[in-house]
Image (cartoon, rainbow, N blue to C red; front, side):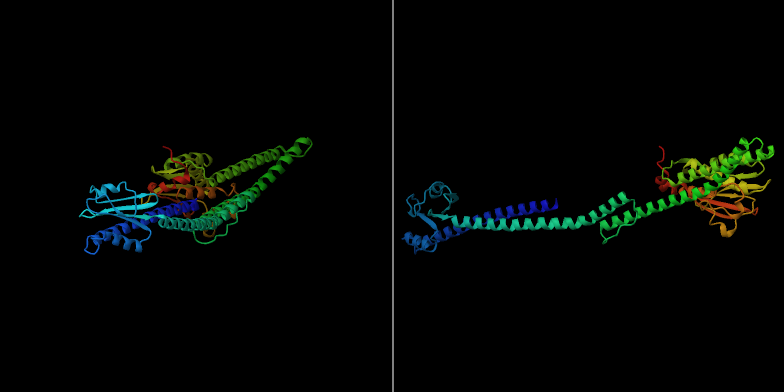
Length: 450
């Protein structure tokens, strides 16, 4: 496309140059004839040639053999010199015009009349001028052809050189698509294609990171599911054996304990699967966003947790504070936090839930329990997937609850940290930015409903 435009531009330039040169040569011929005619008029009116203009004509033809000349004295239509057919020149000879120029039979004919009435007619053969014009035209055509050829070749070379990085990038993209290999592409130079390649490498790194997280999640999930499934299978096989053997020496109490163990293991397995589903949901980018009142989310989560721990006293201090977010994810995070605080608090213990306004217009949520607390060395680990402290391994749970909480809070532009409550237990501190600072996060949470 670029080569075609260059070729078209060169062609137009050659045409304009040819027309300009042709017009310039014709103008030079006209100007030369006019200067010669004026010189002849001035000489014929002088004393040297006034009596014998034929002598002036002979002298002129001696120096200008390619120009025919005719002289008409004042008030006379009888001329001397060369026989030049008269047409428009009659109006000049008759005094109607002082000058006329035209082209006839490959000659440029000029008629020039003096103020006294004498008229000179000069006719110059244009063959030499036309040959010069043709030669210049062929020269321009040759130069233009060479220029067009060079421009086309240069354009092809430049296009090939310019498209080489794109072809390289295209090949790399096709390789990634066909082989599923997410290794980064080698970057050449520092131009726009190099910048595009760097951006593509960032995308590949993000995809590789996502794949690594998915692989780790599947591996961890498989490991965590293995234990309850093995225990559940053992208990079920034992129950089947008891059922098939009527004479088995198993008391009714042992049978009931075994059945309760099976139900508890099934509930633990269901809880783990639900946590895995929630974690996978947080990993995806498909989230809804709508105005959510944080105090209402806390109230709803408290209703669920209180039913499970009626022996724990909840001290709650909240106020309406709205943010743009995912109501399902926020509710799940609050249930996990409150459930975790209640689980670690002893019977007749206290869980404090407090909302505070920050000086910059945000909101701080504090959840403190009366349990044993979290050692300082383990606080940075509790938000990792499947992490369970030694003290918690005898208690129900998958080790995913706080990992889900951190992902939800981070996705909503918040921060989360762990400290010590005034009752000696753990204190979860969550900070949310003002709503006006969360507007840029809408694209991460989903389209805001109208």
